[in-house]
Length: 219
Picture 1: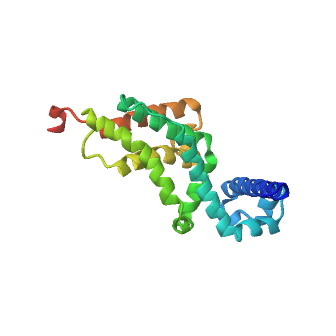
Picture 2: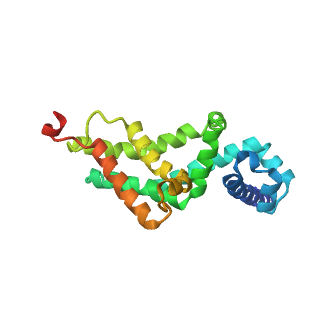
Picture 3: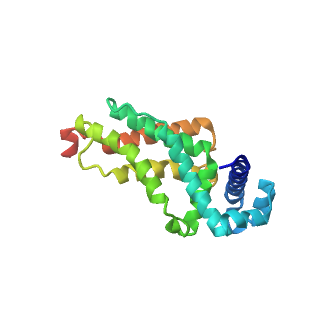
């Protein structure tokens, strides 16, 4: 590759990255239907032609946005190294990671909500999501297995169920934060409320996988 070709490739990557970042902002704010190509072009300081050149269509652009949001989550998670000698604490920290990521990245919650409103239309077209989901679930698996080997966690635990439990407890609070704040008369965006919920769901997840005392299990 000559120098000019390398420069052009770098510029193309930068343009695509700007468009993708702009698309995340616009879709998260305005939804899929409301997210217009011209708005994304303006946000990216680009033009409509470049979006169609790199992504072909609005639908394909949203698919890339969806994959990118999951990929970003996986990249953040990949840097974690749970201490498998302490599986209870490792699982508690895993819940904390999910929670902190959802709070710090409201666009992640927004994009997932939009895709669910469309019944997973774009997700079904993706060749990447199965790989990305396997990576995320795969982080939880060794923690559960370590707890089982130490006799701390139930042997009948389904790894997917553990993932769904953690994800749902973190997602629902954040995706419905505004309506629930009005409904319950509490500001769920308050850091104190958020920490209370994190402590509660961390205990809930641990209790869900722990081996019960014999006298409690028999009741």
